[in-house]
Length: 516
Image (tube, rainbow, N blue to C red; front, side):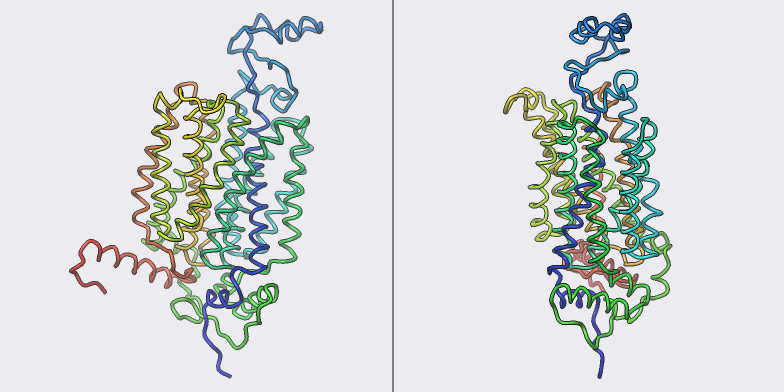
């Protein structure tokens, strides 16, 4: 019997790209994003102390006095100085336990920065591991690392042990974010993959809001580690028993029979007929991936790939500054607990609108529109009237505009995961995604410094973010549109995508010229 030639994408469409299996994967991605966001902002939430004022050195002896009446008198004082501190109402929390105020306040910024340092240095090598050993095994390895590090964090007794654990948690976050994103995309088609990315990104934002809520009500900072420990343990169990290796990765490695077996496992889970008498081919019609496509250095040696990664990397950097910088700037807008929860709630509706909009106008236009709107929100928030107009209680128009700007930037973050994935061939997809994610972590590393920069001027973060947004909008115009295009399996598929995009661009510039 003659075998029928089909691409992996056609097979996925045949067995179902929105079935029970993809629903389970979407739930797993949401759990991963929710608790990754929770742990990202957990340190910031635990170190929130809006009622801190500083005492002069003369009050130090009184504050350390063994006489309860003397201590109580000092706790109600209003003397201010930059050297000593106390908390009115004195609620014992992570902040007070480790004395993270005044001359030790820089440790708060360092704790957040080092989390992103771990992400920054680990995401590229860990993503290379994902391309080498496969999406399934690498995802399980990274989740196990997450669980062990949370347990290690819970038994840490000094601030420096906690900071080391956070560096390693940042590294595990980098591996999980790339491995899960690529794994889900390689089991479905573009539209459900984009919806999942938006939901996952919304989960990340909700995780940040949840960390603020838990920290506000928790009496012991160690108890705040229970939700992510349960979440990642559940995630590991689900992933181990449900998810096989992705067919795209198996086919790219030349293991066609294993790729068909993986597809049939998904078909069985979805209740679809098994695939029979088929031969897998790439989008360009090749039965196997070329040797040139299997070289990891093609990302740097092929000009159009190198140029695209550079442009996308700056866009990732920009949205990281917009997202994390404004998140860490929450303290300058009012009660930090409330602002963090408000920002988390704003993200979801903007991301759902992005899903619909990007599915109609394309990835490039959707990114540029949202970046432009974010820039407009930040410019308007700088007007004096925005800070004077009170909407409800202490909530001002400036707070709403900044929250909207951050939510718009976060929505682009979610879409860039999709856009970058759709540009790159299978065997360097994780590596390319990690390069862009590394650029984003540079922005993330700078973001906690907002706490210190605000002492110079609260407008510096807004001016810098607006300039970056303008440059990113310009650079994204050089990336080809991927809406409605198949996911590239090989370098030849990428060349076809970029060549068609270049020909279309030239035709728009000169419609009377003939192009091949």
